[in-house]
Structures are given as structure tokens and as C-alpha cells.
Length: 428
Image 1 (cartoon, helix red, strand yellow):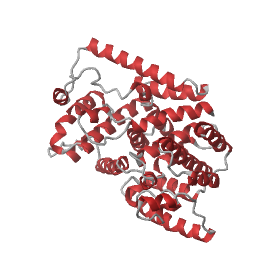
Image 2 (cartoon, rainbow, N blue to C red):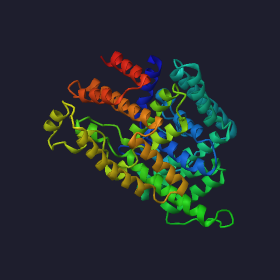
Image 3 (tube, one colour):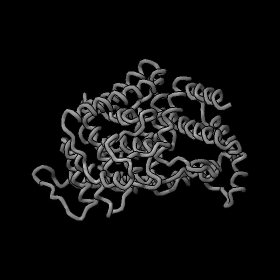
Image 4 (cartoon, rainbow, N blue to C red):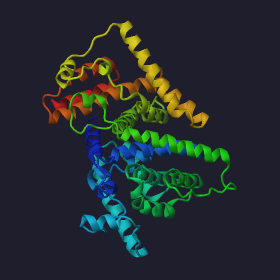
């Protein structure tokens, strides 16, 4: 458990590593690597299901593909090729850099070597089975050894392109040209190719004609609706967690980053529980907080009772609110009704099977009605406590005792208790 804990501690640093390409373009408050991993995993699930791919494998590839950046940093295709002068560098970013084949192969090998070394350093302490699985997923992404690996690489590029379009003004879309050229080189899957054209028609005034002999109306409509859904979930990259804002934490994590942490922790702790359906667990983690897009981030029993001033807020957090069972049930029903309505609104245009699956996962999580939901609810509390302890390292006066009380009220799983013991050893 100690090694798992240290692994999570290091990977959580991705929540503070901004996306390099957008930093170079001068974007204020760009998304982090963790934010990107969250939505690239969600996107691969949405599209992978239409291609009948192994969704568990796709999500694990998504969560493995960039974690080496804890040590290597976010290496874009432009690394070591841009001028140091900011003005010249920004101008260079308007075009895709063409290189001779030998030089390109040499750079690819060097990048592969750096990232491989970083990943092996990161996963070295893990148990053999988990270590091999993470490395296999990363290698699959880098070398495209399976259909899932090749598919994810293409959806990953789409998320990066969408990210650039979301964070840049329309007048700056010339800077997205390199993403388009890279996509043209990489994308071969017909479904992702349709996704690419749909993105272009969404963001640009000049429309691309989509051949009707290749894609029927239903498929085109579904892909358009999937894009709209993905764009909505992008709002979670800009939504700070209410609990940390209320406590006055500087630069708090976004909801997207929290979902990243929860999903990763659910994977590495859940792999010890063979009775759980891992694919279901990972999907549930990815969609458990999506309703926050419309409801805001309802995280603890404090959500309804917070006063207005910072001083009064901190006072409230000094003691865990004790409620009678009837009060708890009333509060749960009110929140559940509100969140479910928001979730239904968010998913209303998705293909029916996908929509029904996501609503079912959301319902199970909120009502704690399955083994996966019971485990994930406990892991969620651990994720919040872990983050709170990280923030308390920087601010000793941060009142997080209530998180410990919440944790002991919610947790009864032995694996979760083992993780709690590691938290105590590390932070106390």
C-alpha cells in the first residue's frame, strides 16, 4: 500500500502541470495534464463504444498515456524546435514543422526514450501486475500495438485540438493549424475522421461537406451530439471545486482534475478487489460528477449551509454537521433530484444505449446500490481527504478535521482503511 500511495502522490502532480502548447500561446489559466487525461478518457469511451472496442482497455490507456509527464514534462511535437524569443515562438506555432524523415525518426526515438525512462521511474515501486499493465497501456499508445491503442491515439489528438479551439479566440484559430496538419497525418479511422470534420464545421465559418455515401444521417447526427456533449464536459476544466474555494485555498483543483484523481485511485485500489467489474467502476468514476456542469459542485453536507464571509465559513468547517436520519434522507432526495435532472439534461441527445448506461451508472453511484458504487463512494471520500491533506501542507491553519470525520463515517472497506493508514503515516 505504501508504494501505491507514493505512486498516487506523484501522479497527482499532473493536476498542477499546465498543457505546454497553450502556455506557449499565452493562454491564461490553461487546463492541466490531469484535466486533459480526464476528457480524453471520456471521449475514447464515447467513441470506442461505437467501434465495439474494449472500453476498459481504452480508459486505462488514456490514464497511462501521459503520466510519464510527472518527470518528463509535457513534450509536444515542437519540443526543442521553437525559438526562445516569445514573439518569434508564437509566430512559429502557426505552422506545422516539416522535418526530413530521418530527423523525424531520430526525434521520435529520443522522445520515446525520455518518456519510457520517466514512466519506468514512476511505476518502479508498484506490484508487478499493475506495473506491467500500466507500461503495456503506455506502450500500446506510443506504438499502436492494438486496435484500442491506435484508436485512442486518434481520439487523444482530437481532444487536444478541441482544447485549443476552446481556449483560443476565433481570431487566433490560425494557431490551431498545426493540430489540423498533425490530425491529417494521423487519422485513419472513418468515425474519428467524421469527428474531425464535425469539429471543423462547429468552429469555422467555412463548412466541410461530409460525403453522404460514407456516413448516413443518423451517424452524422450522433457524432455532432457527441461533440456537443464533449464540449459541455470541458466546462469542468474551468470549474474550481467549491469545497476548496470555500476554504480559501489558492489555485484549487478543478472538478475535471478531481475526476482524474478519483478514477486513477479507483483503478489502482480496485484492481485488488477481483469481485468488482473494473470497466463499470472506471466508467462510473468518469461520469459521477458530470451533473456539476449545471448544478455546481455539491460536495459535502456543507454545500447548503455555508455563510457568506470567509471567517464564518472557516468556523463552520471546524465541526462536522450531525444530522438526524430524516434530515439526511431529505437532503439526499433534494440533491439527488436536482443532480439527476441535470444529468438527464446533459445526456439527452446521446445515443439511447449510451445515455441509458450513463444514467444507470449515475443512479447506482448516487444511491450506493451496487458493489462498484459502494467502493467508489468510499474512494471518492479518500480522494477529497488526500487533496485536503496536500493543501494543509501549505496552509497549516486549513480546517480539515471534518474530512477525517466524513471519511470514518463513509469507509468500511479494508483496502480503504489500509490507504487511510498510509495517509496518517505520511501527513502526521
